Amino acid sequence: MPMTSAAMSSMAGSSTPMSSMAASSAAGSSAAGSSMAGSSTAAQPAAMIHIDKFKYAVPASVSPGAKVSVMNMDGEAHTVTADSGGGFDDKATAGAVTTFTAPSKPGSYPFHCTYHSNMHGVLVVK
Ligand SMILES: [Cu+2]
Image (cartoon, rainbow, N blue to C red; front, top):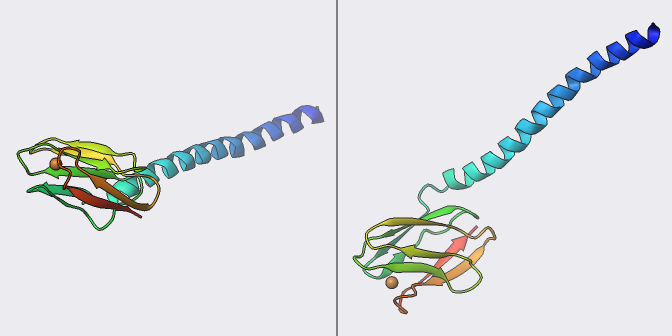
């Protein structure tokens, strides 16, 4: 009989912390994941590259992994293509807004337009 009551009390005792631990760790991991993704995009709402008259207007910097919008004001298609290593290649449709994801590693990423060899810019990630 003492065994049973001990087992019952330990079960009752353990079930509460276990369930609360499971709930808090699940909430903690999902909150960490979504808050990181959310803060990087929310902190940089104006992460937008304007293309106007065959020139890039680039924000001073963008957050790692941020969604960068590309607004092409020209009547001609351009691209925002990393020279090397940046891993982005945005096809900037004429008169439209497109988006790409900034590199997750901080640094300076020179880019160019594949259609117009005189178009160059630098995306700073930090
Ligand atoms: Cu171009």
